[in-house]
Image 1 (cartoon, rainbow, N blue to C red):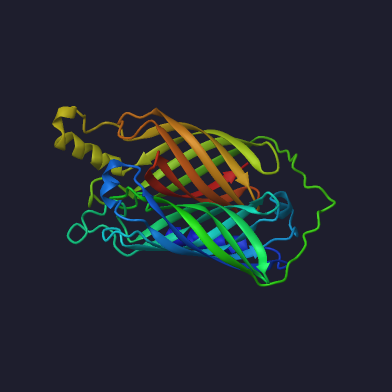
Image 2: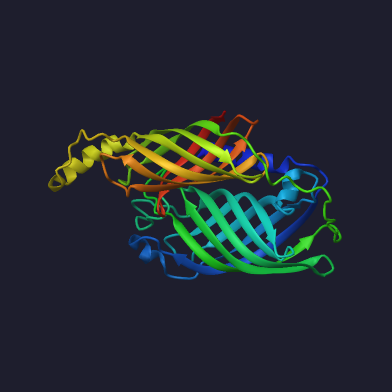
Length: 363
């Protein structure tokens, strides 16, 4: 989890390392909603209506950089999230990370994307809290999506906002159990601008959205540790080697097509365990644990940071433990035009398999 914290700090520093000609604001939001039980074994955790507070510190852009104009002058910054799940098994979570706000419809509609790390007060413990199959470790990853209506400067520098927010907590199967937990909630709050209202003049120089590049070739290694679904079976390293091509279709987007090899070492012991524990399956303990997948993806370039989404299919999967379709959501930071690092989570539907730390080259 130290790597996870380091990468979150790296992305936060990268996001804040922009032009100083920006303004600041803050908003505070009260949230209340429901747990979304994406698997049957989470039903016992749905006992109340989770509630909490989310505080966002905003750096407001005004078009000093080309990417700011391309994205309609977004906000970026850091957030703090407190969430009480109203369930003694789950306890409470505290999260800290970075976010982007993207504006639409005359800057009244806001889409929020936030990613960070979280601390849970009551993780699974086989003696004192065995029923918590959502959080297997004290430190978790946190992802949030929000859509809200926002109105600034209603009374002096104060404004209001209200909308919907989706929160997700998971440790990416760094440690079992890890069903993770999703909530959807209403969000209501106030915002405050530290400067008087600034009129954004429409730039007379258009942003080059018809951005073109030749096909690029990517080689990437994603690695980390994870554990089988058997609690206490131990963490093992994994290595995901990928090769893919991408093609920029405009200033913001690139399409991807590639293949990758998955070497997840926890499967070796897990296959042997399954062959002994469930002899009726007639599972060969020497079944190959490696997998090969093909995938398509989309990368959204913002500045030095990009967001990535991929969907893949296993074309080689001798041990069919998971469904053959997998997906990945991630974030990259480009050191330069050719090298990057990244953080992503690989899942099968809502069930996480690995929290991946990546290093890659784009040629």
